[in-house]
Image 1 (tube, helix red, strand yellow):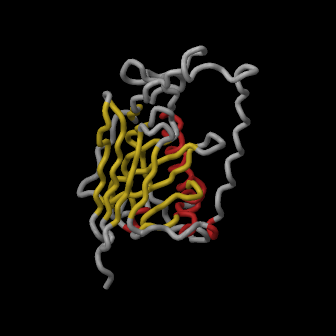
Image 2: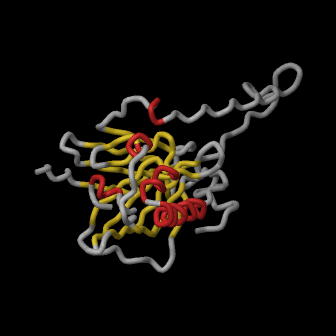
Image 3: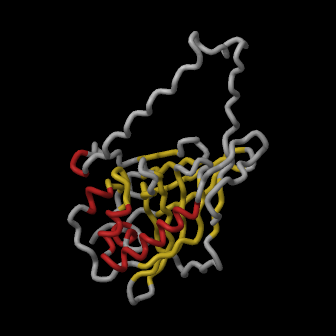
Length: 254
């Protein structure tokens, strides 16, 4: 995507058990095709209902975007009129955490009759209802259009090692008197905050991680507005850098 507000004007495998990486890892139930479907629906919605309408509908309550400074997306989008023509975009690849709670998508955008184009990176988080909503979206322009792949690729992080269950009768593993304790009913997830209730946003940094820690992200924003998004994941038995996006400081107004 192009930088700032203009930057935002853009924009696998089947479900089921997946190999979880090195021996001893959990089985993955990640479904990258769910985020591929979410990206495609997001892009269609922008053309059908308008760009900012689609961004707001697909954003998580605490999503952030860059216009060009980092802002709470739902606050910035609230009541914002759509541009006459929405940016078009296409996802090219998706990477998922082992547990499927966090995914990264990357692709290309095109805008206007002048042929402007660029790239975007979006982080998607699974919500309590099972749907995926984006929690960070950014991008920049590119010197040349990104080549379109023959198909959207998808990869899954290695799964963390299985937890070793204690054995009854072994130190620390004996069940409590009266038999095993019943699992407590999980608490209801808190209601998402309304845009007006969001706390002040740290303009210099933000980060997040999958529930199992197999995919993590951090964005750092310099005082001049330049930013770096770093995404790491667990792959081939070790933590690796998956993606680093660097966006230059916005040009001074005037």
